[in-house]
Length: 200
DNA sequence: GACACGATGGGCT
DNA sequence: GCCCATCGTGTCT
Image (cartoon, rainbow, N blue to C red):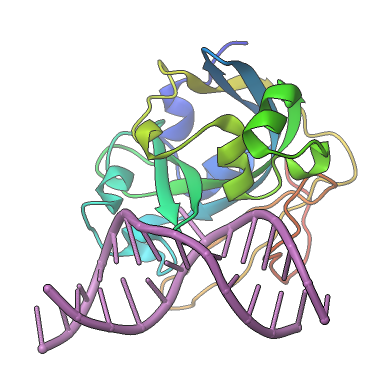
């Protein structure tokens, strides 16, 4: 399971988001290894994207301006964590939110962390994904090229369920785009309107 | 220091 | 579809 190199993430956020779908996310801890195929991601295009945390630079969002290929994990709604991968070159803000994976390895460990046994409920949604992978703010800043979280080079995107969407383009900023892959393992929440376009 | 609210998920109707 | 839990973060005073 070779890792994606930093160069992969040092690209425009929209490109990274689209090409990330189908790759496998890994997390190895003393508890064991878990992995899952990325089936739903969302692009947040930094300073130009009003939906992005980096639309305004704050202490929390400054990590999005830093080196690509590191984890940006934040806490929301007083309950949940969301994980992102920083994109663009160092100094340019951008990140891809990991919204859902198809669980592949370590389902037992995920089930323990999640407190549910139904595999369909293990990793659908950014909060569930973080819980299943044991990700919290302590993992903020983890380097995907050296840490215990990484993305594999192998990719699997075949199948009729692979789709992408373009929504909410603001003419004044020409942002944002958001990429999803539909299918049985996606979160089913906040599905954007608009045409489905094959990607991959 | 105070306050409003969110890139959510779960439970209930 | 509605409501709620729960608290860090950003913004305003």
